[in-house]
Image (cartoon, rainbow, N blue to C red; front, side):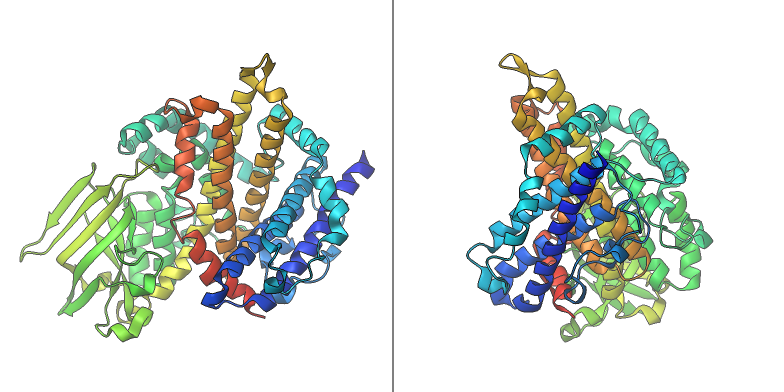
Length: 559
């Protein structure tokens, strides 16, 4: 058995070695011009998948190479002993099988993307020939059967490698989710209800909103390589119960907390962060505008200085949780010269009362107003995403993050904060995948088709095996990316893990729904909620295409 396990790991490493080398070679060749977008998108997407494969091979170690991400300068060559902890990668037969299955599927995807475009990729068409036998081992139906057998028995994608402390955190939030979130999740989705106060208050009592806020300001982050892991674990468990009713509650404190921590004055940190960490003040983010989505530098909402106040005018959209929020993080143009572009943007923390429901409006003496209207959405319900309009709304000058030193820094603070948000979004995707996997296993074992259990069919088991491999790889990558972000240079990894995990969540929920047949299309079955919720993941916190072309491909092209 030991020899067989070593063989699976050998196959997986051989595939990953070549995939890394291909991505490195192509990154140096493809470029990022608009006339290269089709190939650059494929390259970026494959790089994200390969990074997840490297992470899965290194899962369970604290010094694994995946935390460094994938760049053109370090992608070539073999996966050496120095890339992983001496003596192996910390997994066993289950993890080796998953790593091989996943790596082989990524290789097959790469082959499809390169076919007929080898010259555009800058690689030889025979580049994968040398690992054909390894890929065949990873696509052997017997391997998928073996993986599916383990998944069917455990309802788990694979080993998690959590420390004792993180396991306690996971257990606490899983129990809370089972008691408070799962019983109401489908109703909140069907009726587009508000999130019950019991959920918000309960999570606040458990410290959910201060996971990434420094301990000096009332949070739980104390620095170190693993400081974001609790956030990742908690996010997955809450998203497993419901993306809209719980899993996304942490996102906004992550974004606004990071912006204040990096750019705020000491007085602002002490004024805002403890209230956010305790859950006393809920948060929303107002960045996107009707005419500029991912093009944040094109923001037109204006803020004009008038004595000791700033006067805001403009419209924001997709402001999730803007009704219940007490703090709105608003990106506005403080430099009237449009030629200043992103250098003319600044961030404000605007205080407001908390409102339930789908509409709200505030007025000031002198005529200023701000109002919000919830946008009806396909899924991701409960928090409600608002269009928010500012009309002569006045805010104190000391609500500009960083005060005068913060002028023109809004874009940079926002982009830095998005690294945390993208990591958290990847963890949300993993939670959704885990839930879909469990539902698929449960339904397949209970359903009889043509006189046999649905779970006994080879195709069913192949689907479940692939669902597990994707979930395990993305989970491993969220941990590696969390360490990279905590180290201060995880922008690439955060973008890659967000891209691959969110894309995987769409496929996993789709396949889980397909296994349910017609019942998967019925709202009374939870898988239908997971399917529509997963669709939003590749859109917000950086659309898939924008991340691929403007973040990942550009970073890969740098030596």
